[in-house]
Length: 291
Image 1 (cartoon, rainbow, N blue to C red):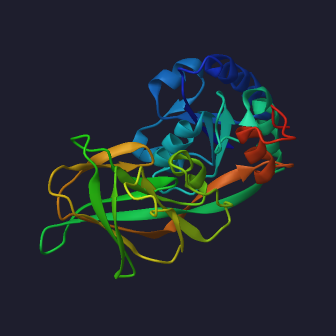
Image 2 (image 1 turned 135 degrees about the horizontal axis):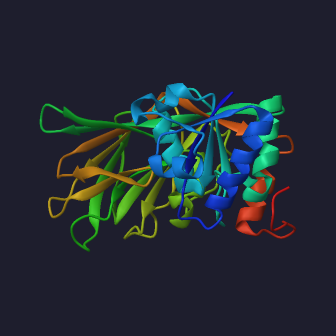
Image 3 (image 1 turned 180 degrees about the horizontal axis):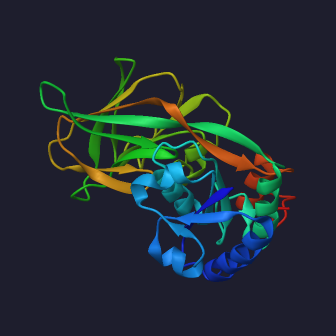
């Protein structure tokens, strides 16, 4: 079995966890594949492949770090079907279900087949510009697509349509469109609702809306959401899963819909989304370390 590795080497536990995986690999007869030469320094037996070939070269992908590393792993797959298992090397992380202390047990479960694979849909965004709606860029996101911040501290205005029907114009700092998985990310920090990961829905969450009546909106996930920059005074930054993806100008339209593609995740025996949620949010009755 070919196990891909994506790791955040700045985490204190990264080097020790990689060393433990390297030792276990010999016993379990698995081979590692990496796309980063720096990670290979900690896994000298790993095969180094070009980023363009990485997704097709692995059967399962281990992400060592936090949620940001999982999103990096999604980008590294570039549409390939290998499932991801997030191993948490930090604190808060909703996409990493296994602590570093259980990394070897997780690898054994993967090799033995004692796990299930679940797919979660992506968002697809198209940036259209000018009177002819010229396509400027396309992007996909597991968590969220955000338009906001920008080139000045002023609030901005974003016009919202759903299935070509006008909804409202938000006067705000920006707007988040999140998947159920992304509802526990940036959208949660902005005051949005928590959606169960299997909910077929999208969240529209204004960032610091100027009007108190502006609230999060939950939509069916088969709807087309169109966001238009309606303020000529400043450009807005387009962020896709936390990565800057260019600038939005006055009149630009961002069309967002559910992608036909999915990202697959490994769930080990005993996995519970509710248990993970309660632990990460420190709800009453939760334990500090997932079992």
